[in-house]
Amino acid sequence: MPPALPPRLVAAIGGMRLGVAVCVLSVLGWTYARSAQPGSANPFDFFGYFTNQTAMWSALVFGATGILLTGNRAVPRWLTLARGVAVACLIVVGVVYNGFVPGTGSAPPWVSAVLHIALPLYAVLDWTFIRDRPPQPWRTLWLVLPYPLVWLLVVLLRGHTDGWVPYGFLLPSRGLGALVLTSLGLLAMLLAAGAAVWALSRIVLPRRRGVGAPR
Image (cartoon, rainbow, N blue to C red; front, top):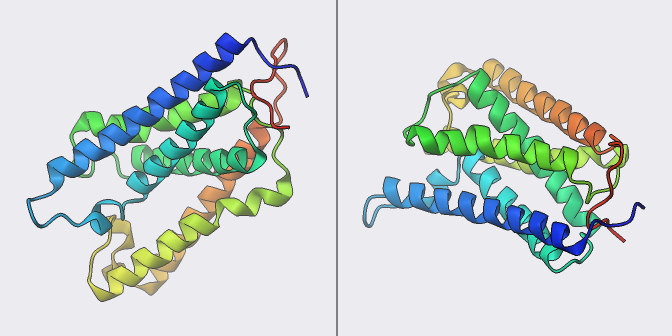
């Protein structure tokens, strides 16, 4: 494993991740408070959006790795794997929103820009250029599926019971066939994003040294 960067630079990278985590959680908190009516706030609806869920737990992962790096401690492999899954999910968030449903939603444009453009872009750049992660084993690629699959099943169940879905392309009125094809397409896109993230973990950048490499 390559030697670590100087402690000050490692701490700076950790501080940057902590800053991103605080920023994202603040944006989510502000957006929730803004959209909620007094006494009628439904967190299950707000956090039923894949974007909001993914942004929240991605921020927690970034914050955890940031804390470890600021203390000049190694990032454990399980946390690196969780970050890889988060990056894959954020890629899907960015692609679906910007490529298929741009401009939708009731959040202010700057909130959408933070959650659908800035955060996925930062996650990919951070994963690519900051080498506090080993190459991810291909046998673990399937781990990008459980969380989105559970989310998808819950959303489809809610759509057929209380009628609420976060995105129009998951409306029950579209029919079973369309929903099955849409679901399979989303999962295929997620696997492709995960494969790209796993492949990026194998890129060896010239004259770069590892940061907080797992022991």
